[in-house]
Length: 346
Image 1 (cartoon, one colour):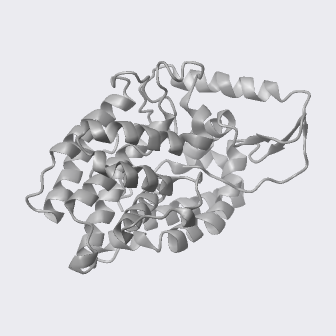
Image 2 (cartoon, one colour):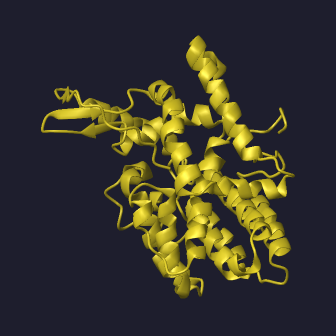
Image 3 (cartoon, rainbow, N blue to C red):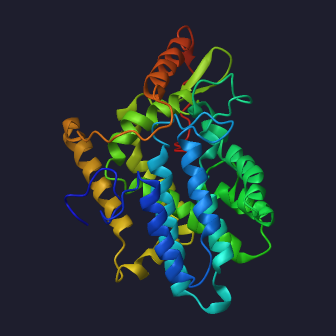
């Protein structure tokens, strides 16, 4: 992995994951090599509509205003998913392969897995920022896919797509998701894996957790959770506190999710890179850097300033105002004393 990796490039420093056209072209190359002769037109349209949705040009929607779950995050994840699909197809026997149609469905699901954060101009006019949907954004994404896929001529994919998108969140118990074809479950594992490894391998993951994910957690009711009347439970006191708890989260939740729930699907990346896994290596580098910061207390080492890729220009200021309002609303209430479990919705 290059030491000179740019902030908005993938783990190989070859694809600009803030650029929809660059990611689309990279996915097209992988898809064409994996499924020779298969059409790419519906995927091309999906990338086009994804960009319109996140930049505020899709009819009826406001555009992306969540600073952590932004356009770059989804594109980074979708590229990781396309690589996982390509590696999987190379690794299994023909009867177990996904095939072009199922792979297409998985990639489109990935593109819109965070559509639930995007506010609708009419239905969501009482909300100020997409982070307010944090605790149920995946269900909203599933609803979006139910509406969108038929418009793309893929009504037959609605049932599976609207279920496997839940592998990116915590709203459903993954063990309760039942699908007729085991290859659809594999797609869920690949999507869930891509979502985790792409964001944790981001060059600016630590800065983004402190400066962007924490405010989303405050607005979304994750950092501070209502308890009994007049009481609240504090899960994360600040962006730094979130980072202090990230190593434990990685050990307790991430490894169990990646290795157990998703059956170590991240290994399929290694087929494309001679047995190496640039995503897992980047995650290890990030975690080692974080542990060093926590041990030394030298927070000045977190000095990267990644760009924002949003569809609403006032989003950064809007979420800051919401955080201030949320904190002010706690005055007069008291901590419950309970310790809520670690959680990091993604």
